[in-house]
Every structure is written in structure tokens, then in C-alpha cells.
Image 1 (spheres, rainbow, N blue to C red):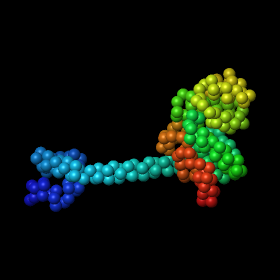
Image 2 (image 1 turned 90 degrees about the vertical axis):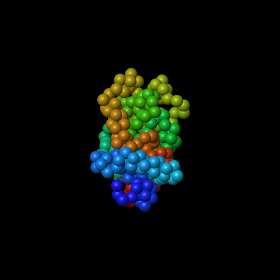
Image 3 (image 1 turned 180 degrees about the vertical axis):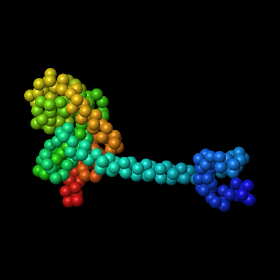
Image 4 (image 1 turned 135 degrees about the vertical axis):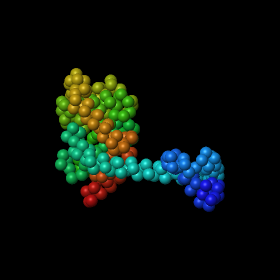
Length: 257
């Protein structure tokens, strides 16, 4: 065929190269079919099989390379989304916030009211805001942990239609509640804030409320957010309960950069 047998070819070029050659056969179409007959293909497949059994670390290496490439692609997509959807992330008028309306730094938190890690970050986020008069903290309701999460987000957002100043203390009360949330508990908490609860129920389905939640879910998907909490600041997206010190570092870096 080539002046050497398939096995000699494998020995000369290295079994790893033969493995790559074999993997390419299916992709090369008719040309490969004209070059290698059935016996050749079977022999190459056996060489690859034997090589992988003798060197299983090759599979691990290949998986690691693939994972690294996928991670890099995900980071690139995330950076692109942060740049292309910056207005929606950092400056959407539909998203509630606390702190300085025209803050020189904007920190965005994606959260779920039933998320224990979000609850763990509650004091840190409020302390950060209290200590920094030039910071704007934007809240992105991301109810991903079940129906009670959705109800809590709807109630919190609907409260703004009666009194925007209620949102932040209601958010604090919902997030700091110790125990499982359900509709009764959520409305009991909301009842502490001089809200018309009948109107609140009606406003839960208001297009502004539903639209904000849906927009946040789409945005989280575009950013590759798979859990809560997640924080966006500048061109950084940071998942997890990172703690007050890390948040301060991120704000300082954004301000100095």
C-alpha cells in the first residue's frame, strides 16, 4: 500500500499519531475509503485499542485538553456578554438598587431568596454599601430554586409598584428569614411593611414584575451563571459567596482601573 504495512507505519510514526490518523478516517470521506481497505482499518483500530489500554493516561490528557478549551470558550462568551449587554446588566432602570444612584462603581448581585450562600452574603453586601457612599448595588432577582423563590421575587418586585423605598428592607427581611419560605411566610413578611397585600397579589403578575424576572433569567443564561450568588462588576463575573474582603478588593480595583 505505502511500501510498509499498517503496523510498521504505526511503529515508525508512533502509536499516538496512528490513533489520530484512525480518528480522522471517518471525517475524510471517500478519499480515505479509497486508501484504506477493511483489513487496514481493522488493524488501525486494533492498534488504537491496544495503545489506549496500555496508555490510559492519554484519555485523561485528552479530556483535560477538551475541558480547558471548553472553559476558555465559556470565558470568551462570558466576556462578550458582559460587554454587549452592559447596559442591561449595570444600568437597567427595571432593576432595583441601593446606594448612590450615580455611583462611580456598580456592583450587581444575582441571587435567590432560598439560597443559603446568598443569605451568607447579605450582611457583607449591606456592609459594603453602607461603607461606600459612591457605590451602587444592583439587585438581580434570579429565582432558580423552586416556586417559593419565584413567589418571593415577584412579591419583592411588586412591592416597588406601591413604594419603591420598601424594596431594600423587604429584600433584607426575606433574605434573612431563617427557615423555608412558602407563600404564607412570604406574605407575612411583606405584611410588616405597610403594603396593600391584595394589590401586592395582583401586582405579582404585572408585566414589569414578570418581565424583569424573565429578563434576569435570560441574562444569567447568556452570562453562563449556573448558581447563586453571582456578582458582576466591570468586566468581571464572580460566582459564589466570596466574602466582604473580596468584594472590597473588586470595588477598589474597578475604581482604580
